[in-house]
Length: 118
Image (cartoon, rainbow, N blue to C red):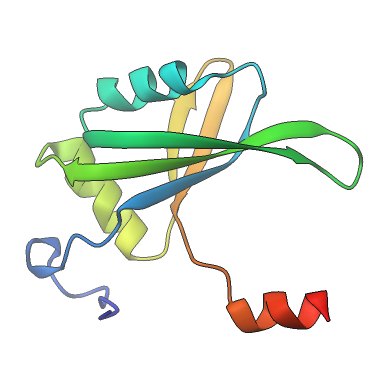
């Protein structure tokens, strides 16, 4: 996979951000609310949303959401979001009572995982 450069126009970059990650989602927020918020932003067609329950080292419970994008729209919001994500940045999405920091999913380094398990 080619890594885009910051000075490469978004129109010429491959649309390779197919999975987004919201690392902290309140457990009371369900998939249909996440979908509604993102659909209202007109960013793209969502294939599915996966929710993974997490417990922090302090014992706080929250969820992590993975949003699988089937197709990105060509709306202004979509283009701005893709530009930020392709540059390695997060996007912030307002969701009452706060906001989510959304990033492109980065596959974990399998070598580090294997070393931790040894």
